[in-house]
Image 1 (cartoon, one colour):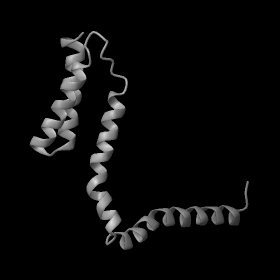
Image 2 (cartoon, helix red, strand yellow):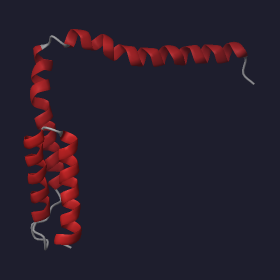
Image 3 (cartoon, one colour):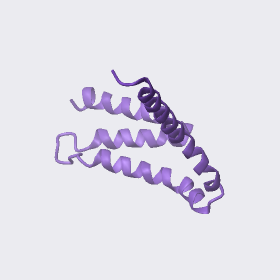
Length: 109
């Protein structure tokens, strides 16, 4: 069994590291709030990330398959339409995913 001093030192080190890992992001954020670069990224990065996710999701769609990629295009269109209409990401994702599942299982099965 390890010495009690060793155990206390290990626990103290773990506590300090845990506290530091949780506190450092808040300390770093304060100077970045007024940064022009961070403001620019905050405006344009979400759309760029969504574009990358859409491209990644559609990379294996085969237009030579029997469905010709139609369910995917309908689901992406519905997701975009719901997002533009309601401005709710969760609702958009649920509607698009649900529509895709319905199309793949019943309409294009």
